[in-house]
Length: 332
Image (cartoon, rainbow, N blue to C red; front, side):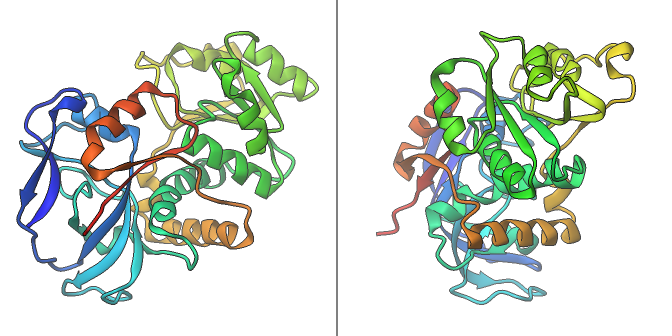
C-alpha cells in the first residue's frame, strides 16, 4: 500500500485526500518509482477544478506528472534503467493514465530521465518541466538565436525564470514582464536584461524603446487573453509570439492583421517535446549541459511536506511564488 493523493469530486484544494492505495506492478514499458519529491504545476490545479484541456475521466481522480525518486521495479521491454537509479519523471502523459502524487507510482519509462549527478530529489522535481518547457518554446518552436530579443511574460514563474537563463545561455536578450514592481529586483537578479512592469508601463512602447524601435524577435507568453494584442505590437517584423499558457482565463483573439503583418502566433505545449523521443533527447542534453556548467539551476520557492498537499495547492493558486513549489515525501 502507498499513500496517494485522490480527489472524489472537482473543486478547490479541500477536495484533495491522502488515502492508502495498493501499489501496482509495472507493466510493459513501465517503471515503479519510489517518489521522493513532487514538482507542482498549474495544470494540476486546473485539472482538479475541471478547467484543464482534458477532463477527469473517472473518480477518484489522481494528480501529478513531475517527480523525482528512485527506480524500484522494472517492467518488461524496458531498457536503460536499473533498480536503484536516481531518476526524474517529466510530464509526458495524461493524468487520467498515470499520476505521481503518491509515495510510489507506476510511470511510463519514456517519461523518465536519469537524474544528473549532484542534483538532489528536490532539484530533480523542480528542474525538468521548467527548463524543457522553456527550451522547447524558445529553441525548438521559436528558433531563438544569439542577438535576438525575447519578451517573457509571467517571468517569475518557474518556466519564466528558466526562459531567462536559457536566453542568456544562447546569447539572446531576455526582457521580463511582471504585473507589479514587487518582483522586479528578483527578475533582474535572475538575469533579465530589463523588466517591464505592466501595471505602470506600456509594454509595447517599452519593448520598442529597449530594442531601438526594432521590437522583439520572440515573445514567450503564459497569459494569453486580450493582452496578446499588445504583445504582438512588441514583435519585430518576422517575429513570433509563442503561447504556452492561459493564465488570464479569457478568450484569446488573433491580433489585427495590420499588427500581425509579417509576424506569426502559435501555441506550444510541453508534450511537443516530451512525447517526441528525439526532441526530448536534445532537450535533456541541453538542460544537462546547463546544469553541469552552472548556467542552469533549480529555482525552488518553497517546499511542503506531502501531508500538506492541500496547503501547497493553496499557495500555488495564490501566485506569490518566485520559482517552483515542491512537495517532499517522507518514507520513514
